[in-house]
Length: 585
Image (tube, rainbow, N blue to C red; front, side):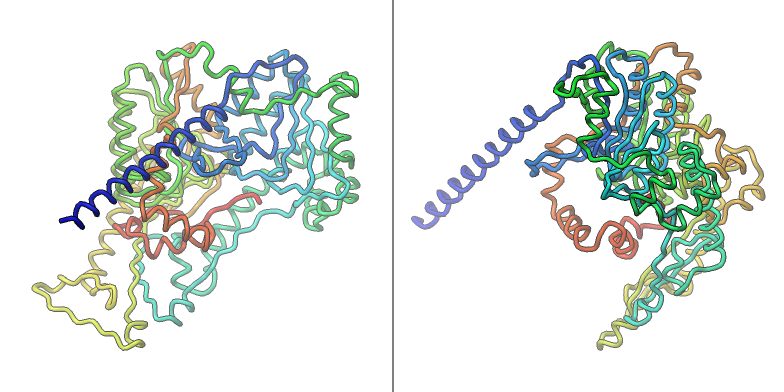
């Protein structure tokens, strides 16, 4: 009995200590949050708006995840819509005299960069300056910075200008070597999401679609860079092919840069531009601070346009870091029931995922459309399931660089018979029916299982095409001809009638306001950013911790391939998913 009370007392003391530590952590976290939060800043006269290394452009609130345990200074995550609106406001703000782009690398997607670039082109019409400075400049950063009136490069820097490439990892021989089987069912010769498991080289069909898509994207991007830098298009291609941007002197010679100067010299140049004395302080203001200075002003709760963001792969169930059907349906219903929201812009940045989850989301959007205008805006990706969920739209806007379409479906089931047999393992089942053991991790899928799954894939494809025919007002044959899993650029998708207009998120918002007959309005983002407390408890889950470890060890791209085989959310039925990602490095 004495031992019992001793153990109870020890447990109580332990709980008190842990509780005290947790309380101290929460207090510390709140204090840090209060200290580091964005306070409303007063903008000084003669200021320069700056896009620097600390600014990270994100597409949706779900991407704005802060590290709770990082006490060092973190990047400022700025929403794409906010940054383009800030540039628009700065155009007529007498306190802002110009914009300085000072970033060597950007993780923003192609359509995000293009939207910011377009906003900067419009800003220049005000007569205010846009300058850019770089050290070792990524291709993405140069695509954005090349819009500047003048581009300044560090004398020992360089510009990583080399064109676009997509490299696909093929794993058939690897799987054969280690005895891993893969039962694959797909519709469409271009549905190459499963191709790495079927062969050891790129199929002619896949090479054709990738080549067409990359050349569309590069033609658009290179034309813009060459025009901004006033370089002949054929000469520009020679510059890129020869990698002249890597050598500072050659960057200067071939007009990729205007001058080679040090950063302090660049700051002095900005001072001279503002007619400041050398000992005067240069007023630089970040986009995040500039946005916070006015964002809450005159915000009316009535007459709102909701921007509903679908960013990431599409899954069944609940979750935070992607598009989870259960969570997403709740968001749609919340918007539908909110009378202050007069129209909805559905911003899609997704390569697809579960066919079942995509269908759930599409149905709820169709119900929403009965009550409010629904306009769709495509980001970097609107492919497979990402394109499917757009089919409730009144109108679809795509960016020229959006990877669009991939109207196709597939099923992929791994099994491990050969590797098991090689290691002395066999599996035998007792069944009540012919296909009771339709799928076995060891023996794979029964012939009856393959037959019914093939029918399921075909039925899902027909359902996919049906919704596209209804929205795009085309025949089954017309959609099937441009479907088959093929991915198109946004420019090509517009020509094929897969989208209505080429335009930005801002264009979609303005059209939604027009559709709802709103003169003035406010924009509200959904879903809301996940709070730090929700992040804390989410991170305490064992699965989330192990996921972070795996991502860290394998890398983001390799982890996605690993997920295709092991993640039960990706094995929960027929899939609508795009085969690859394209980005400007």
